[in-house]
Length: 102
Image (cartoon, rainbow, N blue to C red; front, side):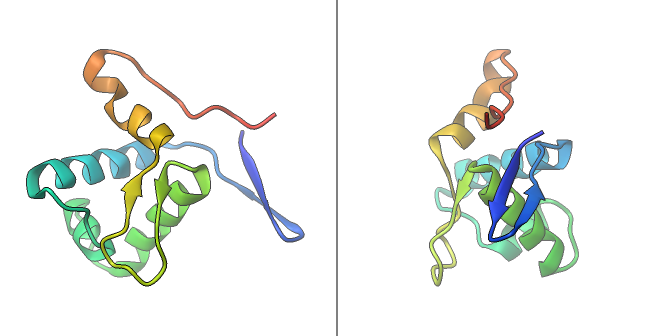
């Protein structure tokens, strides 16, 4: 289990199947459109009907260090190096799971 500290609270950021689904949707969107998706576009790609669940999924991936977002820029949701490895690992028959913190 991977935990990150935010102030005095500790938040569970264990990698889950919905995280892989979100990474895959991000990668497919980028490949098809040649630009990064907005939160709403990613939500539509995932079959979500509102902004909140899409934002929740993205925030989880940011806390895992798999995505990076620039505040105030709608199309700034991009994969980190670790996120790219996790997202494309299946294409090469390799399953990569984010490393847990020591």
